[in-house]
Length: 446
Image 1 (tube, helix red, strand yellow):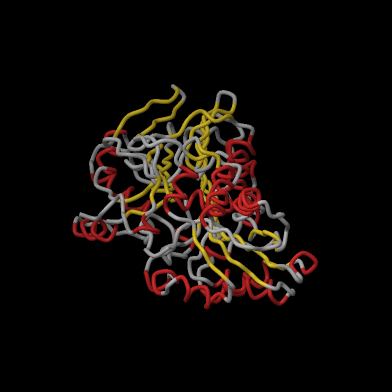
Image 2 (image 1 turned 30 degrees about the vertical axis):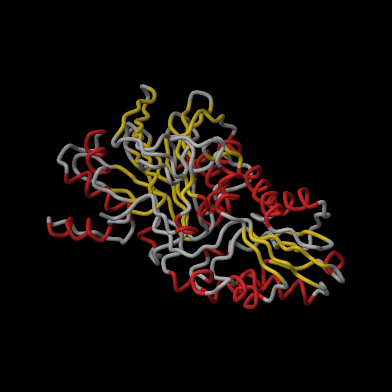
């Protein structure tokens, strides 16, 4: 998500901000702009460039905007669900963009329908919109606070009215969200890399349980829930976020490099060269090589014009995407004992294919090292890992996984190693969600 308030080129700035966040979702993109009187929507299916090449920015004038890129993690791919969603009424309009997952959405939908609401999509922002309207208090801080208190899950919300913008983060801060400044304008983004691309400066993180109101009067902060111990998603550091982003004051590249160093301490192996799977594993591979004293080489090359295979909607598309996306460098791996660093193994499709390609390119041995623990549990907080059946580590031992992917050896980073790489100190402000690795869920359905 990306939002800006107080800039006369709000739509264009949001376009560039969404470009920086393209890695977070490649199925659709959208923006809503306000000029103080009306909300204007432009959205579509496809990459940011594809969606906005049809946009006339002269018609999208305004001083504030919110934008969103999306992958359909819940199987919801209709055009009507492309965010931001706009809700119009006689008493005013507002738009909502969302990152994460409302865990009690089924229950809330049932309650809303029993009260007469007719929901048009299966996306979570619509639930929040109906809950807000049901308070009878308009689209106000009080109404939004009341609505958020009924939601269970991991979520970050951006809401835009004609005269203000609201920003909210769940009580444990599972999803990332930061505030920046661009001159006199306020900027909000899921990752700080979006600030860099538009020339904004980082101000601070949105705090867990915080509700912000941004308007021409400045920024106002309130709380809709008591602040819980921070549990930012561990997979943000492992895979999802860009390496140049800082999450909860920790640089993603630095944390991934340290993951690789911890992995080298825990799982050394006799080898000739270390290589990483582009792009999210490169930092960990550099760290592994540095710690182990082995040379790091680009043994696998990525086609920059292919999207992320993990967030492809079907297994068949994932497999095809791997074949098109990655190519081994024969001159680097031929005749070598290769340590292949990957950030994680979810379903095993990508890892198996890459091991096979490296061996077909002449590698003597391929030793796979994973810079995160085993993913054995589904995620209920917004990542597309919904069932244990699809997770290779939930149904196979390490040796069985090694055989399935065709590696000569396989080892994972421990939970302790992961936390050592990310958490600077044990405190309420520091901490990560490791539910997909451990089964210890910080947010439970009551």
